Figure 1 (spheres, one colour):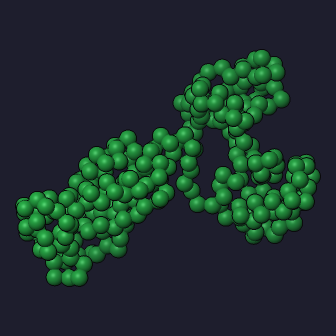
Figure 2 (cartoon, rainbow, N blue to C red):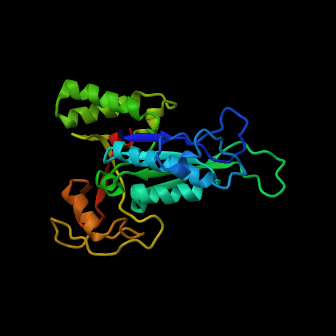
Figure 3 (cartoon, rainbow, N blue to C red):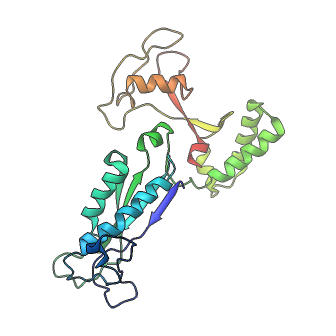
Length: 268
């Protein structure tokens, strides 16, 4: 499995008389734990955290085994067991594979005497966070209008093969024909085309200021390229890696910084 979501009991003890209450019912041989079987876990139960941990631990171990190497798990929880869940997730999945502790806002009531704690959490862990980074995994919603552009590019590619110049011309004509309210119109900067699809120039400047500063030699003039105003966005090794992968391109000479190629399909 690549993605797992679970919503375990929150162990608040507030729903002891409701259908949502939970009981420890695992098949175990330990006589102390067997004494828990079939008994609803209530708010005043002094062993309620022990029971919850004993219930969660083997299940999370099993889910860890079922998760693929590039998989991710999401676990809902609230303040009552957050601290315990975080500890066993760190133990089973590894603290180095922690991705995020998301806050989910629920509807708030206005009758709280101190603070209105109308939120819950979702813990997110990877099976292997280094692998996700190595694969350059990106989670984001598709840009509105991107789907239509990709479909148009594929249609033109079927007709024109790898004649990227013709595909590029036809794509630009298609952009020009769109009404101003069409969502794809806002993405018309993706007007260049290669084997990876429509793309646009981006910049290598660090947001704001304080980026990396080092000489990046232009392959033709053999002189250092102009450094962006904010400094380089990436370090020396990372820029070299991206150049070797064909993700960064040099201008005609060293008087302007090189630019990364931002492909539309990465946003789709």
